[in-house]
Length: 319
View 1 (tube, rainbow, N blue to C red):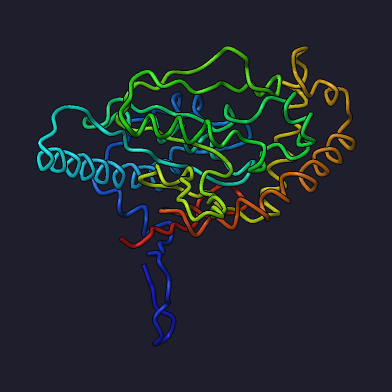
View 2 (cartoon, rainbow, N blue to C red):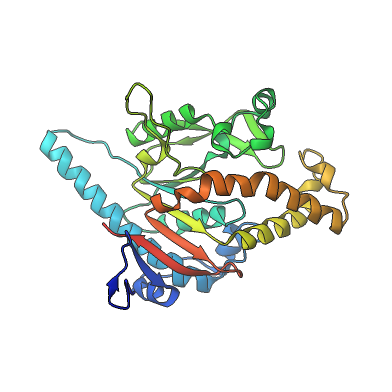
């Protein structure tokens, strides 16, 4: 880890680590995932390996276990000071980054690793996709082409959900999203019941709200996070991964009669690549540049991927 260039200090809020430097921080953290577990957890077109888990995820798991234990101790100390009894506050981790960066795999692997620690046996995962407005609403507002942009989410519902979870309420419900029908599933929900850790994954979870004109404080999603991770990659790599994933989906889930994207299932390779590139440029790249990437400096931890999906650099915010 080096924070100096020549004789001048680098003014950065982060400690920067090479892959090898970060891997050394694993210490004696045990590997509790098998290759079978990893195959089940990883997303389409995200070729994560056990070596990646050992080098990147185990040190992160160790760090988070220490942070969670410290936070639990602080909460108990506060309860003693206030003369309060019982209850617990879930530790909330936000995971942000572009479409095709690998957020879903990262979130599921971290959920599996953290749930194997003795002090955090209950780890839940929620994606912000469920808090998108239904397609009918987006279409009526002319926002269907901006799905994934901040204005396409029901931010009030998401903040109320996180507020209830952070307050220690039981059986808090979150809506469910279908990537087959490309819509929120009406009447379905998942229940979050006082977990030790909640992982919240989404494109724009680190985005701040605009200040209120009357000066009132407006909470935003990351106010409820105890820790946050931003998964970063170069734009050209993200585009390549998105197109590759789109072409694989054409041959798999797009062929489902229920799929919103079944119209693409009959395209040839040239047409599929052109379609995917158009969607990437028109929607995902614009969202990345305007909304997602500018939030990277707000993360507690930044993981930077290289062209082969391998994480090459780690930046940890200084306390």
